[in-house]
Image (cartoon, rainbow, N blue to C red; front, side):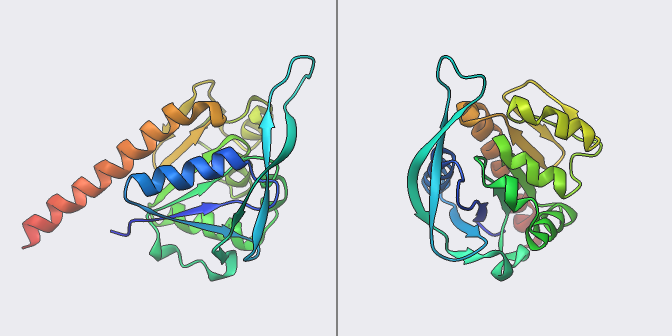
Amino acid sequence: MSKKILVVTGDAGESYETLYAYHRFLEAGYEPVIAAPSKRWLNLVIHDFEPGWDTYIERPGYKMESQLTFEEVVVGDYEAILIIGGRAPEYLRNNARLLSIVKDFHAAGKWVLAICHGIQVLISAGLAKGNCLTAYEHIRYEIEAGGGTYSTEQAVRDGRIITGQTWQSHPEFYREVFACLGAAQESERVAASFAD
């Protein structure tokens, strides 16, 4: 089984979500690969909450280099795909190649992961229908309009789809992600031992 994880973002992707994912996968022995519409340094942002605002605020965040374009993605090379939140999913959900990639991951029975606004890409790929998802609370209407059920849980697993509400949900989200990835690897290890 591949130990590579495809991490999808773009300009205005949430920097904390991107960096946390990248470092957490490295720490666990995976190879995270950043994919975006083009190969270059991406301008990430910080979404946070401040008193007096009815919604989140946005500030410039860290930069991160994308390692490959959507056109270069080979689904079979990866164990899972993770769609990062921020404002990037607002335009990434219109990218036909990305939607095809997400559908191919799902059809192949691979893990499909999304956090915060990243769920907008799953909705556009048709993966909300019949599934229970969580996301930033203002995405609830889109989930339900897409035929899904919105959950207020910090992290939700429905089949091979795992979603998280926001970067504040990292502990619950990544506990679920690594429990599932670890179980899949253990299952493959056992199957390989019987084949020997």
